[in-house]
Image (cartoon, rainbow, N blue to C red; front, side):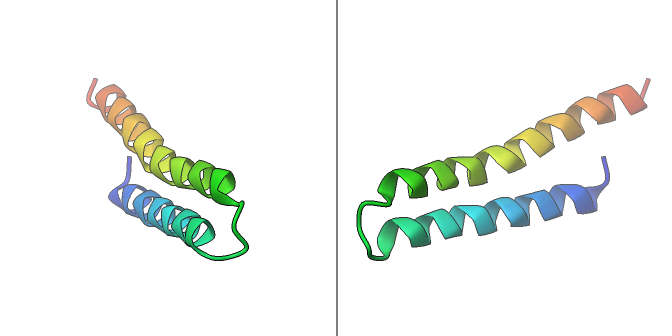
Length: 62
């Protein structure tokens, strides 16, 4: 997998994670579950992309 795709997925994941933190910390309060879910998605996206990149690099070397 191209390096630019890995970098962009990490940047998008970081942006989504920071957005979740922002939602959790700012009023109106009561939005914490949505903020935590958004933070989880922000962590999940780069992990999935790196895993898929690892799998495709294994296939391309064969």
